[in-house]
Length: 366
Image 1: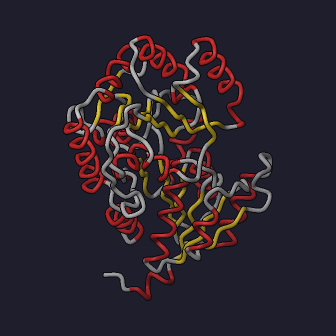
Image 2 (image 1 turned 180 degrees about the horizontal axis):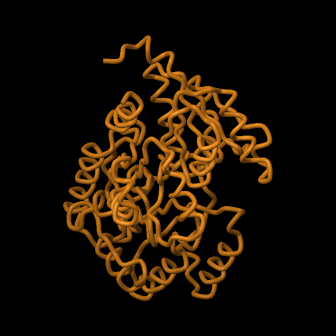
């Protein structure tokens, strides 16, 4: 058994692209804080200076820094390799595809650390980037998907990975994302928190909103996810909303740091994406007791169960989307309250911080 003093000496670098507002970054920041609380020597390293989550790390006393020259694409491989060689960590935990690839290269070229790479999405196609990354995973000590769908994909396509694979699903701070019992409003508020982007299916969802409006359904949608990097797609979505004359029914808003307040002000949560890993936003939404309407893809069915706490729909079919959302909007009050309680119970059973960090520690101490 590892005692506390031994853990103090074990140095871990958690490595990702930036501290931006993404779900992967949120999980990595949470993991860093939890590992520090377990008395590990923790550093968070990024190569882009975007600091959405930096304050959380600073408040928790977690060392975090931007790798010198890491933002330069031409120098990035060498910068990461040099940084890791200088830091001499016992373990590196890499989140997202490019950081995982960079960490593998650093290890192949002489890195003495042990390495966990993390898969945060479900692979849809295998191109050159995927082939290179998955080949380099031979030098990783553990491969951690956050969804069983990705574990199954990797096992079936790359059988040699099986011994290294360990799915660790996302965690939620169940105290912070607290449960509140709501009374459904006369005009229910539907909330979406996801990038306004093709993979999240914003245009398809707008088609479903148009159908719901034509059926005289009463509702309002707030989609939090505007990003300057996807501005052309965002403008296409705005234009379609204007063309359909449904501006009173759906608003496209900036990303927010006050996401808990957004959940607490909603009646229903929705996520119409074409694919996911384990979506943080669904996990957080059910923790607060929200009924959920989401795509029947990947691991979503583990957290959203038809007839218990939400509905699943075909993201390629706006009519099906509209039908399923309409079902939630028309729930009787007693059923609506039961869906809320069921959402919270599912979250408590599947998404605790303790099981999340313990799963990583088991790998680290193996």
